[in-house]
Length: 187
Ligand SMILES: C[S@@+](CC[C@H](N)C(=O)[O-])C[C@H]1O[C@@H](n2cnc3c(N)ncnc32)[C@H](O)[C@@H]1O
Image (tube, rainbow, N blue to C red):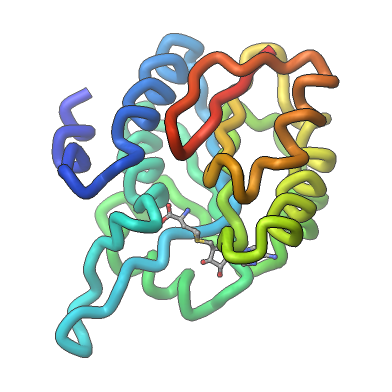
């Protein structure tokens, strides 16, 4: 997957996981990708919008992948400002991305398609209790939209994943890969 090379940056600590996810997803012929928590980038020199590797830059990575597989990325964020920033640095994949300004729980409730690849990365990990409860609520809503061939990727292991991993394990999901930062599950 040549498109991935531009994301193979030393600062991209999540690259190894994304490479793994895209390999499995490609093999499984996935088409529908959903993420909660859109990339916000960062402003440099007042106006230049830059990638923010600390956050992960999942939206451009998923956007590039959606274009590569001719699939579609649905990304949701509660902040209109963040969505507008993401639109500006994902212009080249705009045909393959739908942006939703909404609370992720409400967005996932309304989402009416089966999800092939789900990434849960809304909220920040500063408040692990709140963030873990929120990720658990997301997982509870999304679980009925996942199939045996779906992948679910959880970000911020240890700060947002404290309740969702147990919930998914109790519901026949298994951990198939993990790094210091993220956990990948599937049935
Ligand atoms: C860690 S950042 C997402 C980073 C992004 N996935 C990346 O890799 O670049 C978390 C995002 O979640 C958003 N957020 C916070 N609460 C939310 C909620 N209840 N529903 C949806 N998004 C929310 C924030 O506005 C923020 O943009």
